[in-house]
Length: 73
Image (cartoon, rainbow, N blue to C red):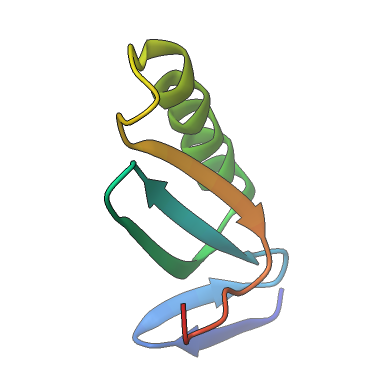
């Protein structure tokens, strides 16, 4: 198994980089993070819950996409 360190975190082969976005009507937060498959599945479940439990279009919702975000965002 190949292991290397990324910003103080041990990263195992198979870990992918994702962009997480928390967006509401007034503002949003976006960042990249490296996740193992099990972590990705948890965040994906949270994303779905944030969409189904929101009662208005302005409530923040969580999105997850594979790939690194543009640091200028």
